[in-house]
Length: 546
Image 1 (cartoon, rainbow, N blue to C red):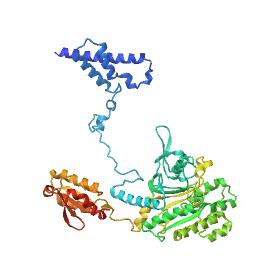
Image 2: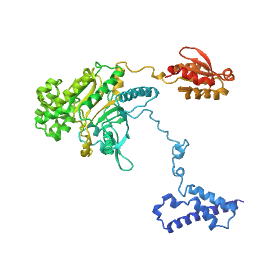
Image 3: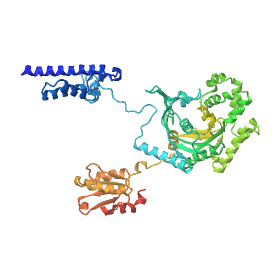
Image 4: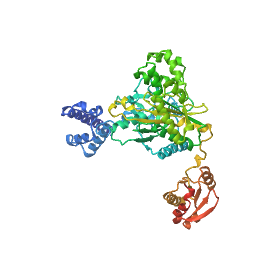
């Protein structure tokens, strides 16, 4: 008996080997090149080929034996067109699925680090409620001012951000080469993506554009209070308006937000300048226009580092110390009268700033505005009015910033369709820190959202409780169903903790009468409501559940 079984096994193995060899000969003799087949396909026959070979080329074996051979060969082929199953190929599968392997049984698995990557954040439900509150304010302000929301991929071509050497953003990119050998980067800011989108339409967008977005941005930079390596940023931009009206509208929207969340001009100021001021000064000092943008990038760093730290870079641009000292003297000017003495009455920069201030007065926001010639912004693409919102106590870094960037499209090769534009970016981290400092963060967010908690007193009544929950949800209420068997004391405690307004209780007596008991968690009243009348009850309490 054993010999017979062994002969069957040996015979089966011989047949499988023969089938495999026949399969390889057929592949090699076909009109296809072997290279066009996956490596595993050239080694292992497909199940259909096995079946054909067994049935047609080896007809002398019995039907049961033939079935066994086909099944055995199919197991070898992996049952997937001749390709070895990934489960067979993956030698670590046992370990990955919780089993033990001889190689891993002696080594302990490294404990997972549960902290988010340095510079990033987790958003638990409480954090999300605060973030949603902030984003809702941003969206409401943008809508109030007639802006439309847009978005773009967080992953962009690296070339989109490497416009000018010397910008901090270039050195702070999260960039890498993807599997298609493309150089890509996580967006550090939104404005270049917006410019790319505008260019993609080739003049097909009706102007002016008033768009806003709330993108997540990434920069690998030194972390301080209110500065992380990822953050969300409220962006508002106006394209197609060449006058200072665009900047004034943008700053008015920013001030509108500050007022909505309880901040005043005593808490926040907005420094304003024009890059034309520095341009006119540099022209008088003999600095050529092509060095202007790079000079602005370096001048912007003077607020953070001493002059000696950037002196070498300035000298490379041909700016000796005497020129730099004259420039820094101009940057210290804080009044229109001071600029008039330096630039003259006919200065285009002075005219631009006067027009802007006049518009701010018309908006009624002049008490928020602070003229400061040292504000130039660190991005090379700014061309005119620039501004920064700041904490008047000086404890926090810039809250928001922006300005005019009329020539941004030119840096992407769009010289024939350059469009005047202005905008700002407003990060989420600093404003939350500021609101925390002023005790202006909202309270009670953890209680917002649930109108009614529904629970069944008995497991048999659970389907009836689900019917109650469905009726209330269709009536517009937010409803939380207690999914486990709990005692009433636990349910009421839970309902109060999440700030629910009502509790709907399905008991046996209520079910027999096709009713549900409603407990008012605020007024502490109880009433019985017919299940068929729940929609009317929900409508009558709509003012309390909104």
